[in-house]
Length: 116
Image (cartoon, rainbow, N blue to C red; front, side, top):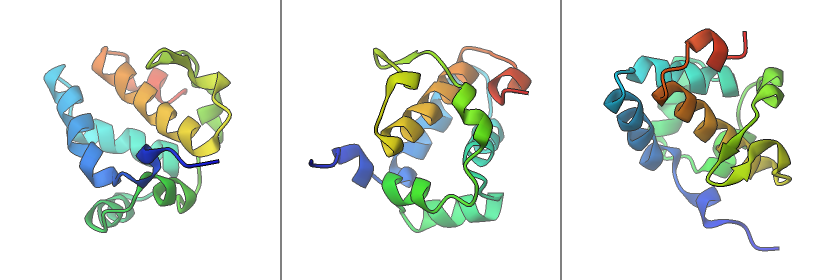
């Protein structure tokens, strides 16, 4: 089975788009970073190092210090697909991130986004 092209995209190439989406709706880069740190367990320094290193999505999630167990609570549709129905682990992690950034851009409170 061939891998999706998105797996080899660097997180750093997508990161500015995530930030721009949030900022366009009045949210901040620090909120985007908080979401990524919550999801992956990276510290801010580790996140910045991954971005600087141009780490691809596959390795970004494979090397994540501690994927948040509460991420399984993320439900809903992103890009026409229910995130809870995605079977491929890396694709599911990518879509979790997409879904959280969508929630941020839609004005949802951080406590709800971070499933507190």
